[in-house]
Image (cartoon, rainbow, N blue to C red):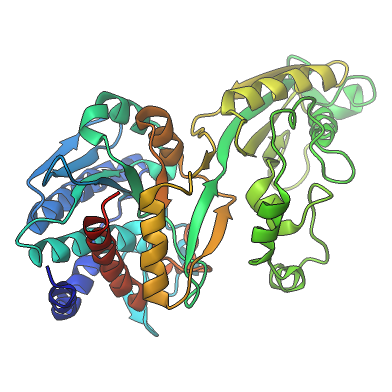
Length: 461
Protein backbone atom coordinates (compact mmCIF):
# COMPACT_ATOMS: atom_id res chain seq x y z
CA UNK A 1 0.00 0.00 0.00
CA UNK A 2 1.25 3.48 -0.87
CA UNK A 3 0.35 6.52 1.21
CA UNK A 4 0.69 8.58 -1.95
CA UNK A 5 -2.00 6.46 -3.60
CA UNK A 6 -4.74 7.10 -1.06
CA UNK A 7 -3.75 10.73 -0.73
CA UNK A 8 -4.10 11.10 -4.50
CA UNK A 9 -7.50 9.42 -4.40
CA UNK A 10 -8.71 11.82 -1.72
CA UNK A 11 -7.32 14.85 -3.53
CA UNK A 12 -9.04 13.84 -6.75
CA UNK A 13 -12.42 13.44 -5.04
CA UNK A 14 -12.56 16.64 -2.99
CA UNK A 15 -15.40 18.15 -5.04
CA UNK A 16 -17.43 14.92 -4.98
CA UNK A 17 -16.91 14.46 -1.27
CA UNK A 18 -17.93 18.03 -0.50
CA UNK A 19 -21.11 17.57 -2.54
CA UNK A 20 -21.87 14.43 -0.52
CA UNK A 21 -21.75 16.53 2.64
CA UNK A 22 -24.02 19.19 1.15
CA UNK A 23 -26.55 16.54 0.17
CA UNK A 24 -26.48 14.90 3.60
CA UNK A 25 -26.89 18.23 5.38
CA UNK A 26 -30.04 18.97 3.41
CA UNK A 27 -31.91 16.18 5.19
CA UNK A 28 -33.52 17.54 8.42
CA UNK A 29 -32.77 14.48 10.57
CA UNK A 30 -33.98 16.09 13.82
CA UNK A 31 -34.39 13.17 16.20
CA UNK A 32 -36.45 15.00 18.81
CA UNK A 33 -39.19 16.04 16.36
CA UNK A 34 -41.81 13.32 15.62
CA UNK A 35 -42.77 15.13 12.43
CA UNK A 36 -39.28 14.47 11.09
CA UNK A 37 -39.03 10.80 12.01
CA UNK A 38 -39.20 9.84 8.33
CA UNK A 39 -36.25 12.17 7.63
CA UNK A 40 -34.23 10.47 10.35
CA UNK A 41 -35.02 7.06 8.88
CA UNK A 42 -34.15 8.31 5.39
CA UNK A 43 -30.78 9.52 6.66
CA UNK A 44 -30.04 6.06 8.06
CA UNK A 45 -30.63 4.73 4.57
CA UNK A 46 -28.24 7.27 3.06
CA UNK A 47 -25.56 6.33 5.59
CA UNK A 48 -26.04 2.63 4.86
CA UNK A 49 -25.73 3.19 1.11
CA UNK A 50 -22.61 5.30 1.58
CA UNK A 51 -20.95 2.52 3.58
CA UNK A 52 -21.83 0.01 0.86
CA UNK A 53 -20.45 2.34 -1.79
CA UNK A 54 -17.23 2.61 0.19
CA UNK A 55 -16.88 -1.16 -0.07
CA UNK A 56 -18.10 -2.24 3.36
CA UNK A 57 -19.40 -5.75 2.61
CA UNK A 58 -21.94 -6.11 5.42
CA UNK A 59 -24.20 -3.21 6.45
CA UNK A 60 -27.49 -3.50 8.31
CA UNK A 61 -30.08 -1.08 9.61
CA UNK A 62 -31.15 -2.15 13.08
CA UNK A 63 -34.60 -0.93 14.16
CA UNK A 64 -35.23 0.43 17.64
CA UNK A 65 -38.41 1.70 19.32
CA UNK A 66 -37.51 5.13 17.95
CA UNK A 67 -34.76 5.69 15.35
CA UNK A 68 -32.60 3.04 13.66
CA UNK A 69 -28.93 2.21 14.15
CA UNK A 70 -26.63 1.48 11.21
CA UNK A 71 -24.04 -1.29 11.77
CA UNK A 72 -21.31 -2.18 9.29
CA UNK A 73 -18.52 -4.77 9.24
CA UNK A 74 -15.40 -4.93 7.10
CA UNK A 75 -13.39 -7.89 8.39
CA UNK A 76 -10.03 -8.68 6.78
CA UNK A 77 -8.33 -11.09 9.17
CA UNK A 78 -8.47 -12.51 12.69
CA UNK A 79 -4.81 -11.58 13.14
CA UNK A 80 -5.55 -7.90 12.49
CA UNK A 81 -6.54 -5.23 15.02
CA UNK A 82 -10.19 -4.15 15.01
CA UNK A 83 -11.55 -0.64 15.40
CA UNK A 84 -15.19 0.31 15.81
CA UNK A 85 -16.05 3.72 14.36
CA UNK A 86 -18.91 5.46 16.18
CA UNK A 87 -20.99 8.45 15.23
CA UNK A 88 -24.54 9.75 14.93
CA UNK A 89 -26.52 11.02 11.97
CA UNK A 90 -29.24 12.88 13.89
CA UNK A 91 -29.12 16.62 14.52
CA UNK A 92 -30.52 19.25 16.83
CA UNK A 93 -33.58 21.37 15.93
CA UNK A 94 -32.82 24.55 14.01
CA UNK A 95 -34.75 26.91 16.31
CA UNK A 96 -34.55 29.86 16.67
CA UNK A 97 -34.95 29.92 12.91
CA UNK A 98 -34.85 33.71 12.62
CA UNK A 99 -31.24 33.84 13.84
CA UNK A 100 -29.85 31.84 10.92
CA UNK A 101 -28.19 33.94 8.21
CA UNK A 102 -29.09 31.25 5.68
CA UNK A 103 -31.64 28.43 6.19
CA UNK A 104 -30.42 25.66 8.50
CA UNK A 105 -31.03 22.88 5.98
CA UNK A 106 -29.86 24.76 2.89
CA UNK A 107 -26.07 24.44 3.23
CA UNK A 108 -24.09 27.55 2.31
CA UNK A 109 -20.32 27.91 1.96
CA UNK A 110 -18.88 31.22 3.14
CA UNK A 111 -15.27 32.08 3.93
CA UNK A 112 -14.12 28.49 3.82
CA UNK A 113 -16.89 27.21 6.12
CA UNK A 114 -20.01 25.23 5.36
CA UNK A 115 -23.00 26.56 7.32
CA UNK A 116 -25.85 24.17 8.11
CA UNK A 117 -27.43 22.34 11.01
CA UNK A 118 -25.40 19.21 11.70
CA UNK A 119 -22.31 20.37 9.81
CA UNK A 120 -19.93 20.18 12.77
CA UNK A 121 -22.16 17.99 14.96
CA UNK A 122 -21.62 15.68 13.26
CA UNK A 123 -22.43 14.83 9.66
CA UNK A 124 -19.14 16.30 8.46
CA UNK A 125 -17.18 14.13 10.88
CA UNK A 126 -19.25 11.08 9.94
CA UNK A 127 -18.49 11.39 6.25
CA UNK A 128 -14.76 12.04 6.77
CA UNK A 129 -14.53 8.69 8.55
CA UNK A 130 -16.27 6.76 5.77
CA UNK A 131 -14.37 8.53 3.00
CA UNK A 132 -11.03 8.00 4.73
CA UNK A 133 -11.69 4.27 5.15
CA UNK A 134 -12.80 4.04 1.53
CA UNK A 135 -9.60 5.66 0.25
CA UNK A 136 -7.14 3.61 2.28
CA UNK A 137 -8.97 0.42 1.31
CA UNK A 138 -8.88 1.29 -2.39
CA UNK A 139 -5.13 1.88 -2.15
CA UNK A 140 -4.66 -1.39 -0.26
CA UNK A 141 -5.99 -3.78 -2.85
CA UNK A 142 -9.65 -3.21 -2.06
CA UNK A 143 -9.68 -3.79 1.69
CA UNK A 144 -8.59 -1.80 4.74
CA UNK A 145 -5.33 -2.70 6.51
CA UNK A 146 -7.23 -3.58 9.72
CA UNK A 147 -10.71 -4.81 10.59
CA UNK A 148 -13.15 -1.91 10.64
CA UNK A 149 -16.64 -1.90 12.12
CA UNK A 150 -19.14 0.95 12.16
CA UNK A 151 -22.03 1.95 14.40
CA UNK A 152 -23.96 5.11 13.59
CA UNK A 153 -27.04 5.94 15.66
CA UNK A 154 -29.94 8.33 15.16
CA UNK A 155 -30.63 9.23 18.79
CA UNK A 156 -27.48 10.83 20.22
CA UNK A 157 -29.06 14.26 20.36
CA UNK A 158 -31.82 12.88 22.61
CA UNK A 159 -29.50 10.96 24.93
CA UNK A 160 -29.07 7.65 23.05
CA UNK A 161 -32.01 5.96 24.83
CA UNK A 162 -31.91 2.77 22.72
CA UNK A 163 -28.19 2.44 21.99
CA UNK A 164 -27.34 0.34 25.05
CA UNK A 165 -29.85 -2.33 24.10
CA UNK A 166 -28.55 -2.47 20.52
CA UNK A 167 -24.95 -2.76 21.69
CA UNK A 168 -25.86 -5.40 24.30
CA UNK A 169 -27.69 -7.47 21.68
CA UNK A 170 -24.76 -7.25 19.26
CA UNK A 171 -21.79 -7.69 21.59
CA UNK A 172 -19.96 -10.26 19.49
CA UNK A 173 -20.63 -8.42 16.28
CA UNK A 174 -19.29 -5.12 17.72
CA UNK A 175 -16.27 -6.57 19.54
CA UNK A 176 -13.18 -4.45 18.88
CA UNK A 177 -9.88 -3.31 20.36
CA UNK A 178 -11.13 0.26 20.70
CA UNK A 179 -13.75 2.70 19.48
CA UNK A 180 -12.95 5.70 17.32
CA UNK A 181 -15.53 8.37 18.07
CA UNK A 182 -16.16 10.70 15.16
CA UNK A 183 -18.25 12.88 17.49
CA UNK A 184 -16.12 15.78 18.72
CA UNK A 185 -13.34 18.02 17.52
CA UNK A 186 -9.86 19.44 17.96
CA UNK A 187 -8.65 22.04 20.45
CA UNK A 188 -7.86 24.58 17.74
CA UNK A 189 -7.14 25.04 14.06
CA UNK A 190 -3.39 24.66 14.66
CA UNK A 191 -3.51 22.67 17.90
CA UNK A 192 -4.36 18.96 17.82
CA UNK A 193 -5.88 17.35 20.87
CA UNK A 194 -6.88 14.03 22.36
CA UNK A 195 -9.82 13.92 24.75
CA UNK A 196 -9.23 11.53 27.66
CA UNK A 197 -12.39 12.10 29.69
CA UNK A 198 -16.08 12.91 29.31
CA UNK A 199 -18.58 13.64 32.04
CA UNK A 200 -21.63 11.54 32.71
CA UNK A 201 -25.14 12.88 33.09
CA UNK A 202 -28.00 12.35 35.49
CA UNK A 203 -31.15 14.41 35.83
CA UNK A 204 -34.51 14.69 37.52
CA UNK A 205 -37.60 16.85 37.84
CA UNK A 206 -38.75 18.06 41.24
CA UNK A 207 -42.51 18.55 41.57
CA UNK A 208 -43.78 20.50 44.55
CA UNK A 209 -47.38 20.96 45.67
CA UNK A 210 -48.93 22.91 48.52
CA UNK A 211 -52.73 23.32 48.52
CA UNK A 212 -55.00 21.22 46.31
CA UNK A 213 -55.77 24.19 44.05
CA UNK A 214 -54.51 27.67 43.16
CA UNK A 215 -55.96 30.27 45.53
CA UNK A 216 -56.95 33.95 45.64
CA UNK A 217 -53.88 35.77 46.94
CA UNK A 218 -55.94 38.36 48.78
CA UNK A 219 -57.77 35.72 50.78
CA UNK A 220 -55.04 33.08 51.15
CA UNK A 221 -51.66 34.72 50.40
CA UNK A 222 -51.09 35.61 54.03
CA UNK A 223 -51.86 32.18 55.46
CA UNK A 224 -51.28 29.37 52.90
CA UNK A 225 -47.85 28.28 51.58
CA UNK A 226 -47.06 29.58 48.09
CA UNK A 227 -45.69 26.76 45.92
CA UNK A 228 -43.46 29.02 43.82
CA UNK A 229 -41.98 30.64 46.90
CA UNK A 230 -41.45 27.21 48.46
CA UNK A 231 -39.71 25.95 45.31
CA UNK A 232 -37.40 28.97 45.25
CA UNK A 233 -36.45 28.26 48.86
CA UNK A 234 -35.84 24.61 48.05
CA UNK A 235 -33.80 25.37 44.94
CA UNK A 236 -31.56 27.66 46.96
CA UNK A 237 -30.51 24.76 49.21
CA UNK A 238 -28.70 22.88 46.43
CA UNK A 239 -25.55 25.05 46.67
CA UNK A 240 -23.86 26.94 49.47
CA UNK A 241 -23.09 30.64 49.13
CA UNK A 242 -19.70 29.89 47.53
CA UNK A 243 -21.06 27.59 44.81
CA UNK A 244 -20.23 24.21 46.35
CA UNK A 245 -22.95 21.58 45.94
CA UNK A 246 -24.71 21.18 49.29
CA UNK A 247 -26.37 17.80 48.67
CA UNK A 248 -25.16 15.43 51.40
CA UNK A 249 -22.90 12.69 50.03
CA UNK A 250 -22.64 14.22 46.55
CA UNK A 251 -18.83 14.44 46.62
CA UNK A 252 -18.20 11.22 48.57
CA UNK A 253 -17.26 9.01 45.57
CA UNK A 254 -15.41 11.77 43.72
CA UNK A 255 -11.66 11.36 43.29
CA UNK A 256 -9.94 14.75 43.21
CA UNK A 257 -7.77 15.68 40.27
CA UNK A 258 -4.12 14.82 40.90
CA UNK A 259 -1.36 17.42 40.81
CA UNK A 260 -0.24 15.94 37.49
CA UNK A 261 -3.74 16.22 36.03
CA UNK A 262 -4.09 19.80 37.23
CA UNK A 263 -0.75 20.67 35.62
CA UNK A 264 -1.91 19.04 32.39
CA UNK A 265 -5.12 21.07 32.42
CA UNK A 266 -3.19 24.25 33.17
CA UNK A 267 -1.39 23.88 29.83
CA UNK A 268 -4.70 24.58 28.08
CA UNK A 269 -6.20 26.90 30.69
CA UNK A 270 -9.00 29.23 29.69
CA UNK A 271 -8.59 33.02 29.69
CA UNK A 272 -11.10 33.92 32.40
CA UNK A 273 -11.13 37.62 31.60
CA UNK A 274 -11.74 36.98 27.92
CA UNK A 275 -14.52 34.56 28.78
CA UNK A 276 -16.26 37.13 30.96
CA UNK A 277 -15.98 39.74 28.23
CA UNK A 278 -17.36 37.36 25.61
CA UNK A 279 -20.33 36.43 27.79
CA UNK A 280 -21.00 39.93 29.11
CA UNK A 281 -20.66 38.99 32.79
CA UNK A 282 -18.51 40.46 35.53
CA UNK A 283 -17.76 37.30 37.49
CA UNK A 284 -17.41 33.56 37.07
CA UNK A 285 -19.07 31.15 39.50
CA UNK A 286 -18.57 27.65 40.84
CA UNK A 287 -17.03 25.37 43.42
CA UNK A 288 -14.14 27.17 45.17
CA UNK A 289 -10.62 25.79 45.17
CA UNK A 290 -10.58 24.91 41.48
CA UNK A 291 -9.93 26.89 38.31
CA UNK A 292 -12.75 27.39 35.83
CA UNK A 293 -11.23 24.84 33.43
CA UNK A 294 -10.73 22.32 36.25
CA UNK A 295 -14.38 22.67 37.25
CA UNK A 296 -15.48 22.27 33.64
CA UNK A 297 -13.39 19.18 32.96
CA UNK A 298 -12.83 17.46 36.29
CA UNK A 299 -15.42 18.39 38.90
CA UNK A 300 -19.07 17.33 39.14
CA UNK A 301 -21.82 19.92 38.70
CA UNK A 302 -25.46 20.37 39.61
CA UNK A 303 -27.39 22.75 37.37
CA UNK A 304 -30.87 24.16 37.79
CA UNK A 305 -32.09 24.02 34.20
CA UNK A 306 -35.58 25.40 34.60
CA UNK A 307 -38.08 26.48 37.24
CA UNK A 308 -41.74 27.30 36.72
CA UNK A 309 -45.13 27.56 38.34
CA UNK A 310 -48.05 29.93 38.83
CA UNK A 311 -49.24 32.60 36.41
CA UNK A 312 -46.89 33.50 33.56
CA UNK A 313 -49.16 35.23 31.07
CA UNK A 314 -49.38 38.94 30.23
CA UNK A 315 -50.76 41.30 32.79
CA UNK A 316 -51.58 40.40 36.38
CA UNK A 317 -53.32 37.52 38.08
CA UNK A 318 -53.48 37.68 41.85
CA UNK A 319 -52.99 34.00 42.60
CA UNK A 320 -51.23 31.94 45.25
CA UNK A 321 -49.92 29.01 43.18
CA UNK A 322 -50.40 25.48 44.44
CA UNK A 323 -47.66 23.77 42.41
CA UNK A 324 -44.18 24.46 41.04
CA UNK A 325 -41.55 22.48 39.20
CA UNK A 326 -37.78 22.37 38.87
CA UNK A 327 -35.51 20.54 36.40
CA UNK A 328 -32.05 19.53 37.61
CA UNK A 329 -29.17 17.91 35.73
CA UNK A 330 -25.78 16.86 37.04
CA UNK A 331 -22.57 16.39 35.08
CA UNK A 332 -20.75 13.48 36.66
CA UNK A 333 -17.13 12.41 37.05
CA UNK A 334 -15.76 8.86 37.44
CA UNK A 335 -17.21 6.84 40.36
CA UNK A 336 -20.49 8.75 40.27
CA UNK A 337 -23.61 7.18 38.73
CA UNK A 338 -26.78 8.78 37.35
CA UNK A 339 -28.94 6.64 39.65
CA UNK A 340 -26.82 7.48 42.67
CA UNK A 341 -26.98 11.25 42.29
CA UNK A 342 -30.75 11.21 41.72
CA UNK A 343 -31.18 9.17 44.91
CA UNK A 344 -29.10 11.74 46.80
CA UNK A 345 -31.19 14.59 45.37
CA UNK A 346 -34.38 12.78 46.36
CA UNK A 347 -33.16 12.50 49.95
CA UNK A 348 -32.04 16.14 49.93
CA UNK A 349 -35.39 17.37 48.62
CA UNK A 350 -37.33 15.48 51.26
CA UNK A 351 -35.05 16.77 53.99
CA UNK A 352 -35.22 20.40 52.87
CA UNK A 353 -38.79 20.73 51.63
CA UNK A 354 -40.42 23.83 53.16
CA UNK A 355 -43.24 23.25 55.65
CA UNK A 356 -46.64 22.79 54.05
CA UNK A 357 -45.27 21.35 50.82
CA UNK A 358 -45.30 17.87 49.31
CA UNK A 359 -42.54 16.88 46.92
CA UNK A 360 -41.67 14.15 44.45
CA UNK A 361 -38.49 13.58 42.44
CA UNK A 362 -38.87 11.96 39.01
CA UNK A 363 -35.77 10.73 37.25
CA UNK A 364 -35.40 12.06 33.70
CA UNK A 365 -34.30 10.02 30.64
CA UNK A 366 -31.02 10.66 28.89
CA UNK A 367 -28.58 9.57 31.58
CA UNK A 368 -24.99 8.56 30.90
CA UNK A 369 -22.05 7.21 32.86
CA UNK A 370 -18.79 9.20 33.00
CA UNK A 371 -15.86 8.04 30.90
CA UNK A 372 -12.07 8.12 31.12
CA UNK A 373 -9.78 6.46 28.57
CA UNK A 374 -6.90 4.13 29.38
CA UNK A 375 -4.05 6.03 27.80
CA UNK A 376 -2.00 2.86 27.34
CA UNK A 377 -4.49 1.66 24.73
CA UNK A 378 -2.58 1.08 21.45
CA UNK A 379 -5.27 2.86 19.42
CA UNK A 380 -4.96 5.93 21.65
CA UNK A 381 -1.19 5.86 21.16
CA UNK A 382 -1.60 5.44 17.40
CA UNK A 383 -3.96 8.42 17.24
CA UNK A 384 -1.39 10.48 19.13
CA UNK A 385 1.32 9.55 16.62
CA UNK A 386 -0.86 10.32 13.59
CA UNK A 387 -2.03 13.68 14.96
CA UNK A 388 1.58 14.62 15.70
CA UNK A 389 2.50 13.91 12.09
CA UNK A 390 -0.52 15.74 10.68
CA UNK A 391 -0.09 18.92 12.72
CA UNK A 392 3.68 18.88 13.19
CA UNK A 393 3.39 18.84 16.97
CA UNK A 394 1.99 16.50 19.62
CA UNK A 395 -1.65 16.83 20.65
CA UNK A 396 -2.59 18.52 23.90
CA UNK A 397 -4.59 16.44 26.35
CA UNK A 398 -8.13 17.65 26.95
CA UNK A 399 -11.27 16.57 28.73
CA UNK A 400 -14.85 17.65 28.22
CA UNK A 401 -17.58 18.93 30.46
CA UNK A 402 -20.04 17.49 27.98
CA UNK A 403 -21.39 14.00 27.59
CA UNK A 404 -21.43 11.38 24.84
CA UNK A 405 -23.57 8.54 26.24
CA UNK A 406 -22.06 6.01 23.84
CA UNK A 407 -18.62 6.13 25.48
CA UNK A 408 -19.93 4.79 28.77
CA UNK A 409 -22.11 2.26 26.96
CA UNK A 410 -19.14 0.86 25.02
CA UNK A 411 -17.09 0.64 28.18
CA UNK A 412 -19.89 -1.05 30.14
CA UNK A 413 -21.15 -3.43 27.46
CA UNK A 414 -18.05 -4.16 25.34
CA UNK A 415 -15.27 -3.45 27.84
CA UNK A 416 -13.44 -1.16 25.40
CA UNK A 417 -12.21 2.42 25.43
CA UNK A 418 -13.19 5.20 23.08
CA UNK A 419 -10.64 7.44 21.39
CA UNK A 420 -12.01 10.79 20.22
CA UNK A 421 -11.02 11.32 16.60
CA UNK A 422 -12.93 14.23 15.11
CA UNK A 423 -12.38 17.62 13.52
CA UNK A 424 -14.95 20.25 14.57
CA UNK A 425 -13.50 23.50 15.87
CA UNK A 426 -14.30 25.42 19.08
CA UNK A 427 -17.01 28.01 18.53
CA UNK A 428 -18.51 26.17 15.57
CA UNK A 429 -22.05 26.76 16.82
CA UNK A 430 -23.06 23.18 17.48
CA UNK A 431 -26.67 23.22 18.80
CA UNK A 432 -26.84 26.95 17.96
CA UNK A 433 -27.84 29.07 14.95
CA UNK A 434 -25.32 29.36 12.11
CA UNK A 435 -23.51 26.12 12.90
CA UNK A 436 -20.42 25.72 10.72
CA UNK A 437 -17.65 23.30 9.78
CA UNK A 438 -14.44 24.31 8.06
CA UNK A 439 -14.01 22.76 4.63
CA UNK A 440 -10.30 22.50 5.41
CA UNK A 441 -11.03 20.33 8.46
CA UNK A 442 -13.47 18.21 6.48
CA UNK A 443 -10.75 17.35 4.00
CA UNK A 444 -8.15 16.88 6.75
CA UNK A 445 -10.38 14.42 8.59
CA UNK A 446 -10.45 12.07 5.60
CA UNK A 447 -6.66 12.04 5.52
CA UNK A 448 -6.48 11.48 9.26
CA UNK A 449 -8.72 8.39 9.18
CA UNK A 450 -6.80 6.87 6.29
CA UNK A 451 -3.48 7.59 8.01
CA UNK A 452 -4.63 6.08 11.31
CA UNK A 453 -5.78 2.82 9.72
CA UNK A 454 -2.54 2.64 7.77
CA UNK A 455 -0.56 3.20 10.97
CA UNK A 456 -2.50 0.53 12.86
CA UNK A 457 -1.96 -1.95 10.04
CA UNK A 458 1.79 -1.32 9.95
CA UNK A 459 2.27 -1.23 13.73
CA UNK A 460 0.13 -4.04 15.06
CA UNK A 461 0.23 -4.38 18.86
